[in-house]
Length: 344
Image (spheres, rainbow, N blue to C red):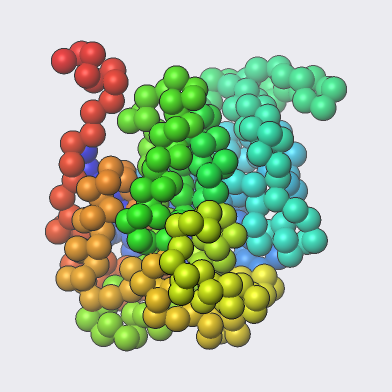
């Protein structure tokens, strides 16, 4: 098994910059890009992905992530079926219950039961099936047998288990501490077991705030914008027992100051409440040598892919340093699925 390292792009910068970042990532051997979808504070993710489908050749193209609250299932299905056609089969529907994109509108994240039903409808529509939804039969006539991997974004125990039951892959954001990563994997596995699925068949993506540089202090400063996002998610979703008292108290202070209107901003006021203790638990912000050791521990847990959002003021040196000084030094364990075991 090889480990894939993929880039997160936050379109809180001009579209041309997003395209440049993706093309650099492709040249350096990254496996894919995940474009954030938060329509109140960022540019449109689907527009960026459509451009990338024509401007890149090998990258997987995903949302990091879209949601089901403000878009009808047929709209989502139509977008992904079209992107799959446009990209030549490189589309990945990264999807969740909604976060800044819904909270900034005064809405609430989707209930998990509703989310599960909508994912079922989206998949059926892409395959060209007729399906009943909210009392009406709906159909996407032009689509036929289109399969787009559905990767569910999860952090809390219930959502992680749902991802293990229904998703092709799970993108979890629980920080960078191996104990927190194991918490996520245990819940995904439990969900897979409940559904009679082979845990090894589920693609495991870990989204982690990351900045790698020989200038360690600069790396830690540059990661603050996205680390604030991750800290917010982790504090709201991971059970209390997984935090030590200091980390819990410091996260609670950060969350009391969190402003969704500045979600992902490197100039937000709330990022000033990030402590070294929070950064060490949430992010990988250090030298290349240190980061290799930290990622290797996570890889050894069985994680297939890492998505790190490049939200620095000048992300290009960080994208290059990571690809050249970290990725080649990571070794992956062998992951065997149930079907492969039976063949043996």
